[in-house]
Image 1 (spheres, rainbow, N blue to C red):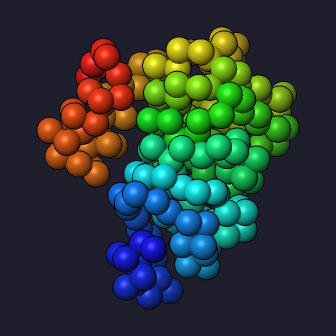
Image 2 (spheres, rainbow, N blue to C red):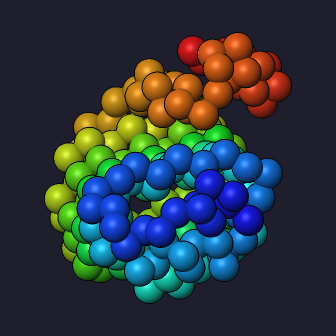
Length: 187
């Protein structure tokens, strides 16, 4: 269980950023946030056994960061239904499968997407009409990923990812984590 979240009575908060780092999250732990009705940011660093259905996620979620989640099922069929999601960062093997598929009409407000260190990801299918507002795409250290979206320039998101990840750890802890995940250092 997320001990920090269990202490909150969320109905009185109007806008918030939630950051959690733990060894494992269960889909039931997300349920407590599903009734949160204000805009929020959610950042999770740690394994997630399975994403809950989108209705059990905060519906006003604006930014979602998933690091080291090790999701085995493609998260996009759930996440693309979040109507207010603007920023999505998936990093450090947040998804360990080989294929992600974004369907038509999915991610209607998404403007910024980062895929970072997704070592197993080979194919990312984006159906026409998905992510219609996407303007920033950062893809880095996805060695098996085939070229994707035409017309949207990509950029190196390393500094952005490092800034997000450093909120969970001291710089030394983050450095060691990244060193253990690769023979090369990218920071």
